[in-house]
Length: 490
Image (tube, rainbow, N blue to C red; front, side, top):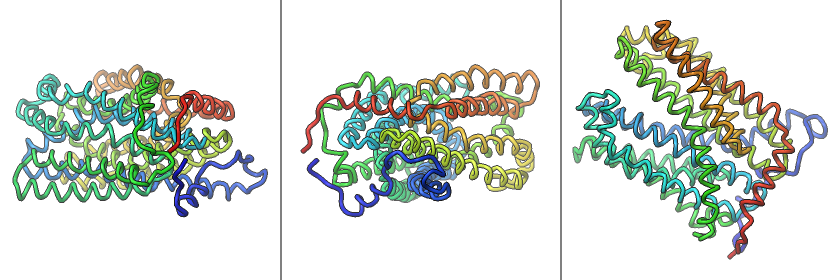
């Protein structure tokens, strides 16, 4: 390649790139030293990833806060549009983009840097076309929501909001691949900086358009569109203007080759992640059809908000584990991938135990952050133990899913998720919720014990029984297959 990295980037890459296959702990190095070194590599990705995800999540929180000051209908409309319509499409596109964590991660570990830009361009093409296929959900949002039982006033306003959020929808097709492209190369600090800029732009623009220009929900929609496209332009600007000289050499017609195989892997990745995400949407819709639904939905919303914020940490570990495992496998270091998995699972579990304990200690108080209603506080208190169990399981399950992404097991995990959540979890939740009359706790319990718990156990068994040397050989074969077409360096 004609371009080279500057001194600081070169030093950082030498520190964080997968090394030659390492001996098992205790052979040449002390275990503590190896754990410390691996933890440094892991947190180099996890730290900025947590910040980026919290910033993105907080954009939605800020939007709902502004909507709440506009009126109850506006708040309900934005919440429904965000959680049902956008949430459905967000989960699928985010999952499809995670295919890059496998491909870019393994290519980077194998030092096939020129292929990273090709993979990202293929992902842009696939996700952009998928956005067009998903567009009817935005165009016909109002009638869809009415069919789901939403009041006409809320459904109509949600439909209007969704039309204005179509630019946001298309930004996902570019922002998600850019983030994974950069994470796979361990260029994580830039994602945090750009996320901070996007969040500040969103807050300032929301205030100006709502209170100064007085555009209401339309102004909030424009602010959300603008802030997400700021993320896209910021990440692309860094990539194209010298931030990735080895992996980005400009647009290439090679991106149009191998699209079918890329689509298959992207679809498997999308289904793997969105099946679990959709279950949460179904949980909210099912709760809305129960007796005393208002109290149940309020209590569940409090728990889901707490869970959503905390979930940003396991999701960061999901991304970091996928990168670390794919980097090591791409470098042919099966033992390094195995050790990275152990350190990531242990670290995330410890953090999960901490937050689980916090929920149990403050089981009757944490809902005060959102409400002072005694009825809702009591309902949340009764569900606190389910929230604690969910947080604990979610500290392990995403990490194991990250291992699956790093190894390229998306198709298998998609089947596992389908079976756990929809063959076991959903029917169990319906039995516990309605037949045994346990209400929302029964529905949620079905998801936890029939879905997440079984899924975690199966993924743990698969990971424990994994032949890591064989996976490294598969990764090498996969890299050769996907980079078979000749490329030229500038």
